Length: 538
Image 1 (cartoon, rainbow, N blue to C red):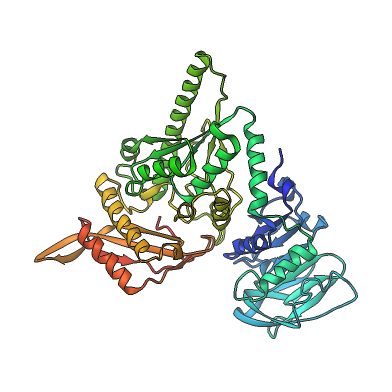
Image 2: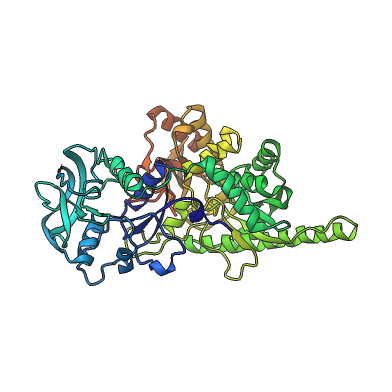
């Protein structure tokens, strides 16, 4: 069975805990080259493919710290191109005989790098080829090279960093002190493209047009001629695209299941049922398990516990549905119908940012929470997971959805977390609390659509806070709960900025919520970016 690395040239990014590591991955993919991020502690012997090139990310550590992370030295024996960025440059020097020391003062901000043309060897000047004699770049470091390793040329310097860029005399080894992956380095994308395309010589075939056919073939290989799959459908773009892709691959052997867990958005189950059956032709079963979920969530405040309970209950319900589907197939066989295969697989709409955020590494890219798509599942789960979107960023999923002829309103729908409103109710969950949040959230989204702002926002939702505030409504003093509104813009949800609403829109939303939602007398707007905050509150 062909794996993704067999089908696409791959750039491996080794993450040392930088907040920018995911951007390196995106910059490669923007050039239609597949890139995959792994923890820097990954051993080369444990990787089942040979990358076309390796990029070492930045890090908050110093290479000489006692607990500093270091790359597997085997990396330097693979004979493939390597690019070290910031800490990655220092890691190359630390491994190959150079020296790294602390700066007199931390350098953070813009700098001008002077490019040194060496000549005499094609590979030495390849990284900056065609980029001119100087570049504006973004620096963010507290250490720098004080002595380059043997056999390296200095191919770039700044006023404060004499060894800002290095290249090996004969091998395709490069290091740069600045961050080309951020937008503050205007020509950084071109530099990464030079490394990926000219030096690593990767094929530019990572497109959704290429992916769709190969992934359908891979799904068919996994499931075989008779294997069947059940899949969770929430109505969000991820599960919708995953369901449609699975339906295209194996047809009626895919059974979509919508679980009403009691913490969905207002009228969600009904809307999703109509949407998938009418617009996509997907065979969908809606299971009302709201009482089961809410009874298990009663009194639970800790968000990690909520995720675990919802994840485990979700699997319980799915396994029961799988048993019903198999029992029905057995009855059909007894009645003379052709025997059908067993339900062996569980479809999940895991995306690549889910995977990145769940990588456990001691640094800014460390696990912040158990993600709803990659954590919280039973250890003894009977079904095997199948995750066709696992390698994709959100924008790639939307592009895939358009290729699958999914209607634009579905493709552009804002994400909704697997644990649903349970992680947007900051406190114990009750039916009354769910109803309050459903009503407020519905008003919020309705007004955003009326203002024609929905497609400008990547994700918008309301959060019910576990606090009460004093208010005055009519002639009466009130003491009621508070709603927080959240809206962000983001390319890939690894970073996000809060959305700047017109004041009149916020005023209208606030007025409607406080007047129409019983139990709410105050509305706030969250103006936190990611980082330091996350998009969701829990």
